[in-house]
Length: 311
Ligand code: TXA
Ligand code: MG
Image (cartoon, rainbow, N blue to C red; front, side, top):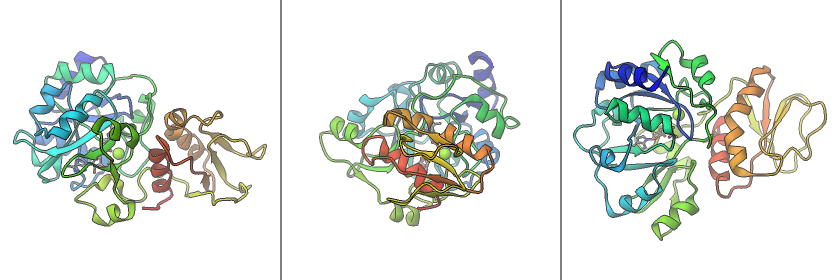
């Protein structure tokens, strides 16, 4: 599907598979409550889990949310993998925010996403284009496999550059990351000139659904049970193995390596596609090791823990 046809489908209240720099989104007109409700239906997503509104530029973002001084500073990181949770303005229907008085907004850094939003002329509500609780899609084929029936079409932008979802940040009253993602806390702290907290995972899971329901344990799960390799544990022989650099992988094992050189951006870009590849071998179990917990490692480890069902 091309951008003009996709924009036409959006204006008619239909759903479109949209590439972004993070993962593919399932996009609908954010101002059309009926279209937004069909997103929840297509994904099998509970209505209490609010959606991100994707805008083409800051001027459009200002029509959906109120910008505080901190939000203004963070908008300098757009377009990019950063979602801001801000006070919502009245044009956004309750279906998008699950009735919250805040709305999640971002400007994606992908030419096809930006072209689609501009051509449609409306902000787009888009969750990741996977069935609820499954692995997020980083190629158009992934979207077609899980949601091909539900969409009017898919814009194929090739594999996603970042590979993990955007960082969800609430700037006020003090900046806190609700979901680690493609922008690191170091980058956020630098843009703000103050420290940025990370919401405690367990507290957040308990506080859900009202705060960040997408962070429920067992999100991003493959079909095979996934567990984390314990520190010092040898790789097991009877599972599919997901390694960071693969230096100590046994030969002959069903395995995948996130980044041979230990590069965290490369590891993030590979994460979901490799999880799918291992899952497709129908293993008894998948065993994955955590990566260093700095920079993008925070987002990667968050997704691995959730795939393992740990809050
Ligand atoms: O990178 C991304 O963010 C991708 C691409 C498609 O843009 N989208 C994405 O959407 O990951 P989704 O729906 O899978 O995750 C949205 C996250 C959820 O954790 C949700 O709970 C949180 O954003 N969220 C949305 N609105 C919120 C709000 N008003 N307050 C707090 N959290 C909110
Ligand atoms: Mg998602």
